[in-house]
Image (cartoon, rainbow, N blue to C red; front, side, top):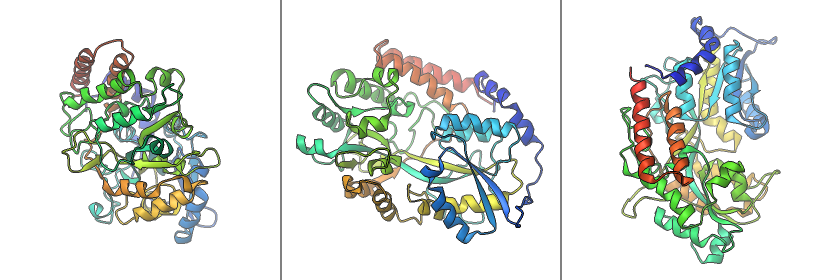
Length: 439
């Protein structure tokens, strides 16, 4: 694959990583502790408290007393950007990385391309399609197993819903969403109907519920920018903010570096389109808890005529470091962690097909400090009706596409250029990046 200059520069910066991995031979389980246990390292961005590591590790040791896992958290704030920078430095320095996590398709595809992950195909001794809801194959090879599964849904302040005489939506469209947002905005704008975050994914709202062709690229790697729902997604954001006056201004979000959790849990916004990693937040913690009832609604549809309710699925990726000499033990851990381990953790929904989703949701909410503040029925219902989309395989330069297209969106949402110019520019930019990376 031909890489563009920006990506080449990233590889040059990480050249130590490539040199370390280039010399790796066949992996064997050789390192042991003083008492004869195999010792593996586990790299993640989660803190031990967030990961519930004590509970997870106790469950692991009961079944696997012969394998010791060293927890290596690379961010005290669970900051994934900080984690990735430190992970690259650790790999480049030759640190022993046995089990490694990443949190999105772009980062995963980039690190596979750089050689950070070992292929798992020879280590998989089960029928993959019968076990997991997602497949992360790259060029026909698997380098990771799926961890937690997060769907995209809508959180609502049910107290404000009740005050406005609105029902918890069970099947709705983006047009209806806009009407809710207007009715859930305070007349004096002391709170808004909705908060949209600054992530590039939040500019693609009417694409993320399409079962196919739901990103910048199609499955064959060609541009998907001719899809009319790109323009519709941009206009949805613009109209909610500038016409309806129901969305927290984008300029505020970027200038004040607003936190999406705080915006919803603190009451500054009545609705939030977000991933279901928010489940534990809405149930309350020692740090924060909503002082209102929270309801959950499925992701809105583009048309009322659409039968199924589709939602973007996000996952954590568990892989093995290409330089690991303990691949058998590492595979045993990631296989356990992505099945029984997530259930022992009690904070997330598993991608394992044998997991009991309703039971897991009840456990997550009941483990919170204020479980009574969550409309559990609406949460369980939303998971039951939400169907996952088929995402196009990630490519190493997808993050550059996101960055460049989002820059055009910013000009539009900040009223520096019109929608037609924005879409024309975005189309041209995406094609240029594709052409620069043709093999």
